[in-house]
Length: 174
Image (tube, rainbow, N blue to C red; front, side, top):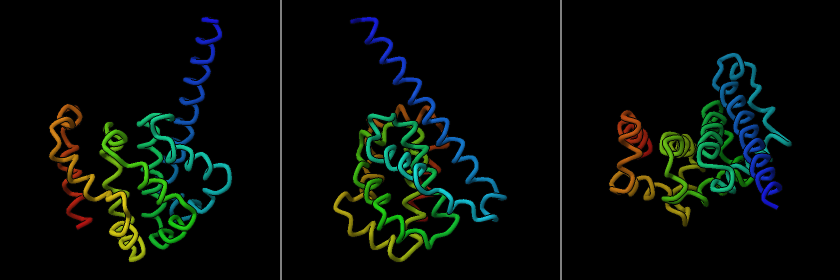
């Protein structure tokens, strides 16, 4: 029984690593100017969208690093074309993202680095701004509270530029 447990744990770790690598590859591709100019971000549909939704729905299950990468992908999709915000709201991507944001899901450098940027990207579109301000989950209040919460100090110390980048993102949002 112990052997089966370790095999299952190893398989889960390998699957998580594969999913993280897949999302990292997509993230790098979306940041490439050639991809943006060719409009290939629109190909992020079907099974790839399902992987993104899974990473956004269950951040504790997939890991906060993978969740942070998924948040960055959403941010890149929006920055490529801000008119995608209503589509991402109606497809459930942005509601899922905002619904899972809390102090537990923010406890990684990747999340603290990427969440302010995606919220800023969402706020660029009028429907996105309305979505953020009307959200019962209050993502902007969450960001503010993480900046002043002493339990986040070790994370901020581990990445020196994190505080200033979060502050800059908050300025853009407001």
